[in-house]
Amino acid sequence: MRILKKKGVAQTAWAEEPGSKKLAAAVRKKEAAADERLVKQQIEADIRAEESERQKLEQIRTKKQINQDFLFQQISERQQQRADIQEQKGSQKLAAQEANAAYNEEKKHQEEARRNKLFRYRQELEAQISSKRPEGANKAKDPDLMTEIEHSINQSLLLDVQSLKQRLKV
Figure 1 (cartoon, rainbow, N blue to C red):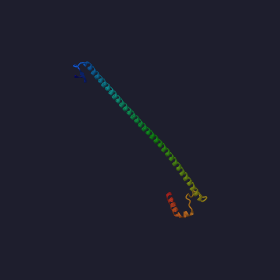
Figure 2: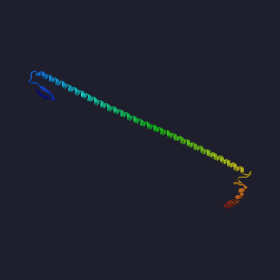
Figure 3: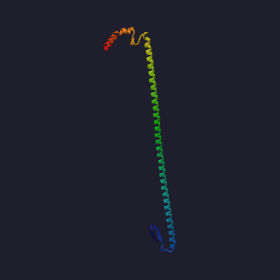
Figure 4: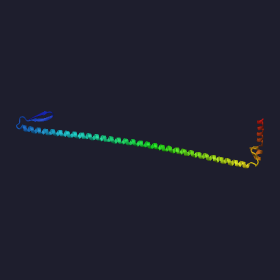
């Protein structure tokens, strides 16, 4: 028996034995079956590898889509937060303006009430002053009406004022 190697496949040659043709055919048949099994196994392995690669690519694509959806959701949430903050700032600004207007209005009313109070107080004082004046007293004659006691206390000052008036007229 002699073994020949051709193209990576072991071949057996039975040249010297009787019935070697049958045996050689059987061996070739076994080798062909083995080759066919190897090819079939290689094809199946290639199919599995391709399927595994396809699944990996699908997983990567799915993960990318999930990540992209997550990022879009975050962007949307941030935009909503910014819009809410702007709306809140606008509401706060409007509330501050309304509070300022109310404050200014209150100050205006307080000032008006103070003026009215002062006016009433002045009227009361004028009424008191006019009630203390002697009847028939002429305001043009004596604008600074004093009681007799006040006049006697301030007599020296009144004389000084009259003398100054006379000096200024001359």
